[in-house]
Image (cartoon, rainbow over the protein chains, first blue to last red):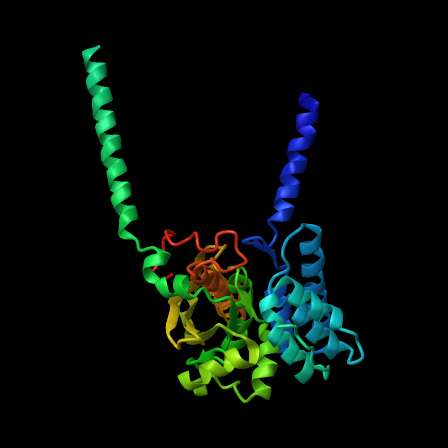
Length: 125
Length: 230
């Protein structure tokens, strides 16, 4: 029993510290500020890729931990992915943003038409 | 026996007095509900952060601030639109220059992007100073959230923080001082402003009433507001 506790307690502590890594109010952000700043300061394919990696990690870690993906992350991922590869299909990201934040629908639609050259979605409202 | 009883009574009296003091200390603070009642009346969901207005001479301040708004504000349970994307969209619509965003333009944000509130940011200080044996960096930011429905101010806050960038001398004597002087100049010049701007923004945006996607939405009216400057 005691041996089991000795093993379990440190493992629990490790997993707790792992969870608290840049977790704010239930949202996971990874290195968002840093990689975004690096890109804004010096927009190169490398800084762009780094920021895309951060956004992808925010999505995958949030989903794995059952957390809500922070607002705007899917749309930003769509935008940055398109900058990186103008042919990339980003429609799934846009759908996911609206799925998590229905209030973003109008903005996402505007972005899709005006930045990505997509066609307007007929919303059922 | 009698002495013990007196002691006990004295301790209880002291504890009681301390408790009363602590309570009166708490009741002096204002709550989110008292300071920002319009946030609870309007309950804005979607927020668009306009590009910061830089009132300082620092050419880099705007980017540092821009990058440190998303995490703390996006964690308050509101639908904060992504700044990297909104900046592009604002350029297309000729709305990128925050100085020109007058109240008559507010409804346009609702109409185009379904935005409920606009975040105005002003950088009022971003100073790096060196003195004989040290240096520091002062960052001052002010924010306001304005309703696109009514044009009224829903929330505002400002904060200033000074961070000491003096490198402590490890060696003693004159040589130690000389090394410290050089190191201070270097540290102050290359200080990473992101943690500083992020700290300030975190303490500022803690005062935003929680939004629709927070489990505490509508339940934080009694939370204290820290009105003191950082």
